Image 1 (cartoon, rainbow, N blue to C red):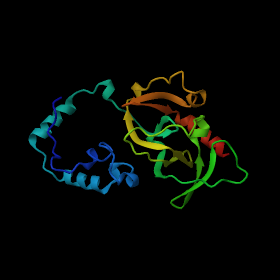
Image 2 (spheres, rainbow, N blue to C red):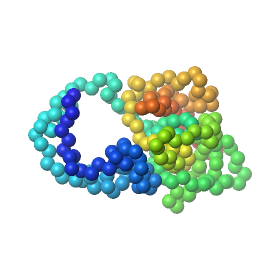
Image 3 (cartoon, rainbow, N blue to C red):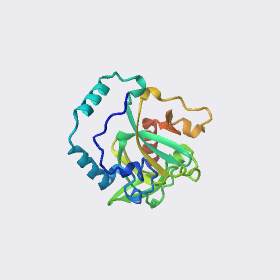
Image 4 (cartoon, one colour):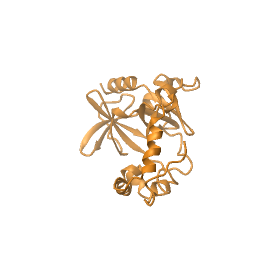
Length: 226
């Protein structure tokens, strides 16, 4: 398909220069994590919606959407991608409630189950803080950010059945859409503690991302909390 004429000409697209799609040098990233959370991005979106759209632009996009999608283009699944140690992992987007700044858990007396780090306070609500590193047998001290990339350690707040959990991660890549038919089998070299929780692996850019089985993870979290 030929390059489409963009109606966004004249808009300051800093996200492509110093943001997540650029060199990631913007000092707002530490606060907002992703450009889509920034007021500059929101203002550009409003400006774009108020622009007039030319006839050629509408014709080119109409022709684009009339084309039948190939199997590779049918991105029917969505996940949140994060890093623990050196492992990039993912869980379905739908089970996450929000993302919060990292916080140190307070240990619970007489509770020493493997994977239960304690409780954390997020916005005035207490959540059990669960260590996926311990549950999956991953060394959390290993791994580092890719070159020219900011590292954002975060708490992922997820909901499984009637219980919410806080999961600390070393880095957060963000939401990724992918084709479920493109999920590959896990490599035989993956450690057994992790491999039993994986339903497959997806490839994105230079990353190989383990797709965690949400049912097994949810069951293990609930079991640990008992």
